[in-house]
Length: 129
Length: 131
Image (tube, rainbow over all chains, first blue to last red; front, side, top):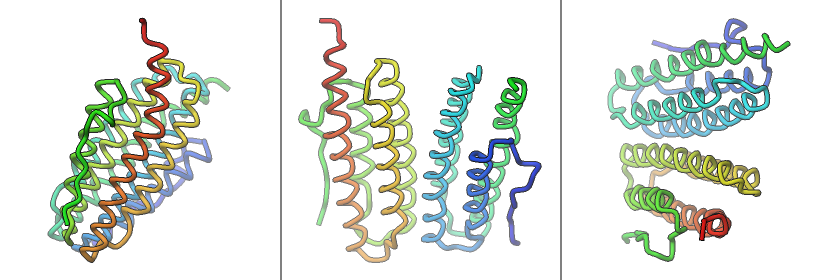
C-alpha cells in the first residue's frame, strides 16, 4: 500500500498562505511510514504537531483580521483536532497495520479540517468582497 | 542517572491554573526515559506537545483577557519554544546518552519558560488584581 493525498485545486480555500500550509501538512502526512519505524514515525508526528500549530495560529490571526463570526467555535475545533491527533499518536505503532491506520487517520484529519472547517472561512471572506 | 525536576513554590507564578499546568508539564518531562525506548519517548513527546499547546493557548487567552501589553512578543516566544522543542524532538534518540540529553534539554526548556515569560506576566497580573 502506498497511501498519499496530493494537494490540488479542490482543496484551495483561496488564501495562498493557508493553501501553502495545507500542502505542507499533506507532505508530512504522506511521509508517515507504512512499516514499523518508530524513529521516522516520531519525526513525522513531531513535525505534524509543529506545523499544525503554526497553521492554526496563522488561521486564527486571519479570522480575527477579517472579523470571522465563528472564531471562538473554530478555535475550539482546532484544540479538539490537536487533542484527537495526540490520542491517536500515542497508540502503539508496532505493526504495519497500526502504522497504516495512523497514516489514514492523519490524512483524513487534514482533509476534514480543510474541507469542512476552512471552506467556511473562505465563504465568509468571499461574501465580504 | 536519574534526572528529575520537582515543582516547588519558587516556580509559582501565583495563578493557580497555570501552576497546575506547570506541574503536569514537570511530571511529563520527568517521565522521559533515560535509556533507549522509542515507543515510550514518542508517547512522552506527544503528551508534551499536547499539554504545551493547551498551556500556551490558555496563557495567551488569559493575557489577551487581561490586556497584557507584551502579548504579541510572548506569543512569538511561545512559537520559538515550540520550534526548539520540535528540533530537539526530531533528533536521533538511539543511545542512552541522547535520551538523557533530551531530558536535560526539556528540563531547562520548561524552567526557562517559567522564569522568563511567566514570571513577567505574573508581575503584571499582580498589578491588575483588586487589592
